[in-house]
Length: 162
Image (cartoon, rainbow, N blue to C red):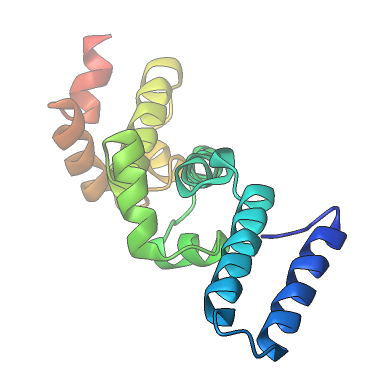
């Protein structure tokens, strides 16, 4: 984005380009090229900043998306809807989330749910069904399978260990 604070320099270069273009000078194309180079250099120096690069934006976007997931992991999270909510392509979102955190979005959500379920198993008397529902997994069989996949034991076995 270019937002020149001092537009006089920019206007002067554009005026010079128009003046040269109207001239009959035999090297006018070279002179126009020189002025265009100066104009481009001026625009780039006033608009491009490394901290606004794609990498910096990627870190900001993914950080806010991860924070949103941390808050809403108990809800049904669909990649398409998540991408729409943050105005980002779902494939790009998946790619940069995996690059940044080393895990897919679905795996991250599953880990958040199971971590929360482990706390509830240890510090509450709620049933497995209630805990599954509370962490966003209403199907008890799926909850048990996912818990076993991540922890290596069932929720009942986990509760008995402690």
